[in-house]
Image (cartoon, rainbow, N blue to C red):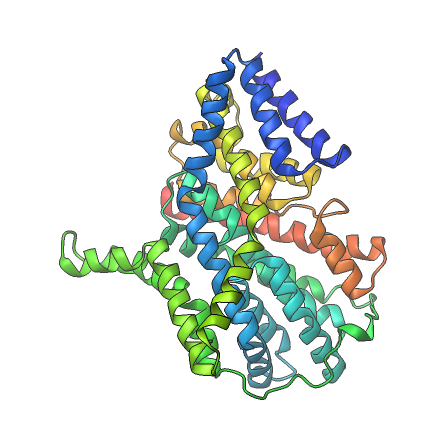
Length: 439
């Protein structure tokens, strides 16, 4: 009966979001109430679980996402993203233009939310394609694959960070494993796949073109890359050095503290305020106003994550998650494949990668404690599944379609397939790491 309640709850969640077009946060709270009551929990207990779930999910995450939004805003407004794109293009040359844009998408995608990175970089892609006379999708798809991978796999993006917190996964290890998985996924889904789309020749509107991207007063390449990747450098290097340094040594303790995501993101924002703000002649009041504006843009993302946290807590407190987990133990499906599959099914139905990832993590959380699977790899398996088969119910699908001026059929054969490859390659990468390091 417990499994039936969970299935009915998820189906009702999909109905509320897809058919009734209800806001995802409101839908999550309604389903949390209904599932809790159906499991026999008193209303006061359900309300308490919802409150606890929201608080425990957002307590740490709100700081990380807030700082992430601030850093992304400063990178965008300063012209650092444009500097990275144009400098890499000039360095790599026309022959290797794809690799320049892959690096651009990866570097810019780390501190920025997907939609922000898309809107900033796509006009530059159009300009590069127009200047080099190369096919537009050949130029653009590798960069978009890199953006998508950072969005789905890597902290400090919302879903992977939230899932890592739920699973008590080490964010540094998650980031390192995520980069290992991301590289082949981007190469196959971006560079290799784009070469099969020569028959597609989109003609985007001229309003999206920047004929001559201005190079005046842009930050230097070193400043742009170093500032954008500063949190990654701190968290990643800390995770690597912890393997090399002796336990209990003062240096290891210092390195561990510097790799704390909260401290890393705070230091990154402070660095960006100086390098991309004050040193470029901006007044402090102007910089602070930009930061306030950046945080206001993530309010709904935080609420959706809080709603998913509420459902997770109700499933846990009612005992249904433990029952589902014990039932799943008798399946022959590998836990990482199962997590990927659940996230993929929800993604196809709902459209939102964030909703899919967080819902799947709530289902898989108790199962993790009953298995020997690495929590970091479980985060990546769910993140990969949450990118599966983007189609007409996903905002990213329509952004790609409208900017590139494609038909729905053409968008399905390009964007949707690219996202599917990213998802499948992510699962394969996770399974390879699990086999090599944990088997």
